[in-house]
Amino acid sequence: MRDAVAIVADASLPTEDRLTAFDELELLVESIDNANDLRPLGLWPPIVAVLRTDPDAELRAFAAWVLGTAVQNNPRAQKDFLDTPGALDALSAALATESNADALAKAVTLLSGLLRHNTDAAAVLTGLRSSNATSAGQTAEGGTLGALARVLAWRPAAGGARAATKVRRRTAFLLGNLVAGEEVPRAVAEAVVAGASEWAPTVVVWLQEDLDAGDDGDADLVEKTAVLLTLALRHRKDAVPADTRSQLQTLVPRLEARNRATGDSDAAVDVQVLVGLREALA
Image 1 (cartoon, rainbow, N blue to C red):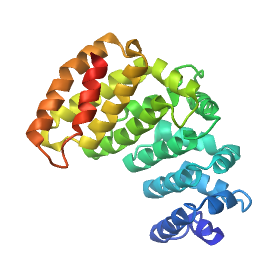
Image 2: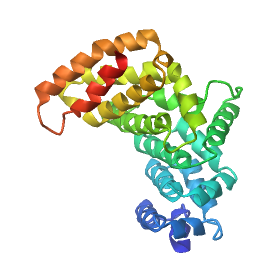
Image 3: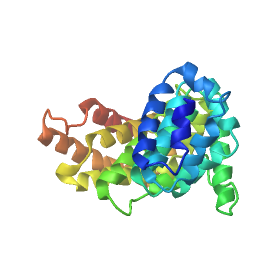
Image 4: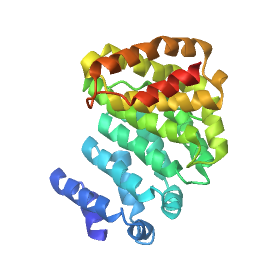
């Protein structure tokens, strides 16, 4: 792993060589033992530095991917990442400023890995919000999901709908995991549901835009967004604003009609997902 990190951290080397080393490193840190060796070998800081400062978006994306793989379902690696000076700031900066869709989507994946099965998940969210606010010269107000506010509203300068969909899928999956509350402390799930007025109107717009895209719609995004909204509504229906619920009641029949027209293809949404959302709205 030392050799691989030495290559990815060396900006004088060709990008292709650094990407190949990142690919090898990602496979290595899939092993929990290897991920846990990153700290004693002093390898967290150079990987974090690529995420924070490298001018190449593909390298920043790979850095987030490797970090996300290392912390996934690994409490020790989660703590090691959070104990690395500047690591949480680097993630916060990526969520707040990254313009590349792939790099931003992988930063969301890194956040997901940090939160799942982490007893300190609430502190991670608080730390992200404070870091984001400080870098923007603001206070740390703005709700539990302040760190994701920019991601929720993000639209690509290039790449169009496909680029936006990539980020939205990851974000809907993350929020769905948080609301489900099976892999994070209950207090985090409750806080995310309580903050539905912040995120629910935006994700409903995603459904509307997916419908407007016609044949270019993304079934995976619809499913993840519908599951997220269903979970929130089942927790506490009034957490989702009334006008947002009304908009959903209009959209669900349209989504079901499109699904019937699509038939049994890869473009179809799981029927039970839409049924669940309709029942949660009733």
